[in-house]
Image (cartoon, rainbow, N blue to C red; front, side):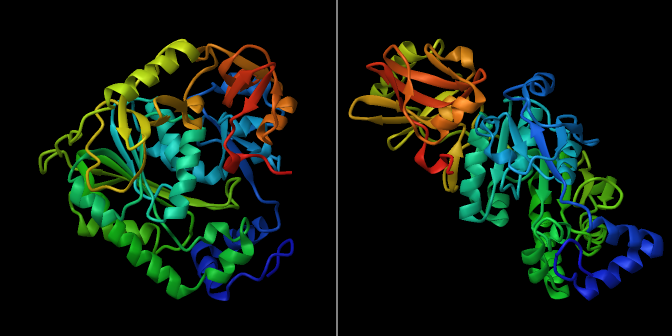
Length: 437
């Protein structure tokens, strides 16, 4: 079967779907592959509320039913818009927005996203937590973990800790520690057959489905040990294979009797707009081992000279000192979230907000600091329209008066730093993030 030029789907996959859906459902499922790929964005309420975004957006927006801040969009290049670079939204496949809300994360909780890259579900959880509590975003693959860091920073998440560790390593450090855990497990990716057809189909095999199922079983086992009694676990995939979905959860519940299933759902592309997703919500019994103790930091904060330089920078260039515990790792200063745990022995890529660097007696701000601030936090600003912002995102110098560090804004929302001097604003947008023609 070919739909819109896509390669033929695996015969074993089609036979299984026919048996699973029945004749009528199977035909509707096949027809879904003839439709265009479904695109979506999720408004980042850490920076802008839904209603305000609807006023300033140039996209045609239709609500996604399972995510209050999600929209279907027809735009193919939503990731090149200046509002994307400002972190006002996250481009996310609509079906994939369904799982994170099931965790019901709340401000002040300890939350773990165990398989977090590229960051769509992590940033959904961050919005629900509203900057309060600890959000641990873990990714085992180093390259994907760096992308996760970029997305967490772009969306202005202040209370996240990004780790690059294996699940077994985390389980040894965080027994019964988290209130909520999301396991968006690596899977055979059958929900990607339309969106990423050639690669997804080429990588699919019945053997890979079995391999993924065994890996998921191990990951779920480690996740179970990190959840406190009474805590909630959400498991999700972007595949339709029963061995990785409902069969996986059935096996998990039989092997972990302290857990009970609250609900599960499989979203097929012919039943709802999207590429397909599965989630299951389970809860650990309230009775059980004592909740894992808080792990305090093992070392102090920033040295006095670095702290003084940071505070001097804030006094000159900001209207307030940003919240957070100032912490120094080498030359890099971070603003850690409240009740930050010890990172001793853990591969930490980011903790809280990377504030900047202290070198030769001076503090230079990081891009992440600008992205964590509001327009009113800057002492000086350069305000750009969406069209003008493209020049800044390409690294061009901007006109502007005054002297010193300033926040560069697009339609009133921070894009990054500039430094004014002599009637121009020098561009400090990171070279690795710049817009390429």
